[in-house]
Image (cartoon, rainbow, N blue to C red):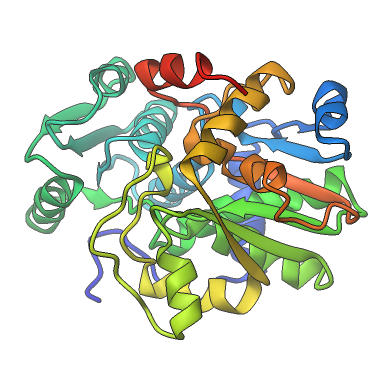
Length: 328
């Protein structure tokens, strides 16, 4: 694939992750590792939750976005960055650019939630509404990056972005040195790539389990068929995991380091959102609840000391109201 301005696609190294941690620690404190007694009693098992949902932008994506923009900023005093997104990545790019005093352009589809567009504007980003889908927005952002001087901050297909996500694993090892299993939601693949690379490098015996929605099983199908599979459509309330295909740059990495992949249905994700709030006291979006859904469905070996990644909290208001009013 041809690189966009500012994009870096190289084999990930521990040096990349260590540098990312140095940058990130300037502005982001480690997310808490929680063992929540009411949740453990409800589950009848002890689990540990890495609460990336408590990041200032509401998701883990702040790590990759900040590391990427900071890396470009180290080479150029004044920069402009651009991305296409209607979700957590857009918010993370907007906040990171604000912290670093740089100009951010976020191209969003017209259908993007008004709340998220308003939040990006409030953070100082220039928001351009274009097209009906993410693909429409991406094509415009790509064109603007190629024609102008803005650096493209890809949500997953970038070494610096993946290195930023990998810093989560460094914190997990520091907070829970005897961890035996890590459960990670998989959408585009950046989070799973970063965490699994670091874990398997530093603690190769730790089991890595990926979780995907039944309505968006791109990596699950790719793994089963031994080749990159592009889905015709995705259908899930876990919009952060709605992805038609895994980026080729990440597919080999995930295939090598992730030990198993499980699928969870929409009802299980909704139940996990409710259980997370009522028993874990955590607000989780669909993607952020996917790992807990796998626990609730009995898809994991909980005899192992298990960490679930709660990846985000930016749930749509109406979806939250609808889900929370359903019975457990």
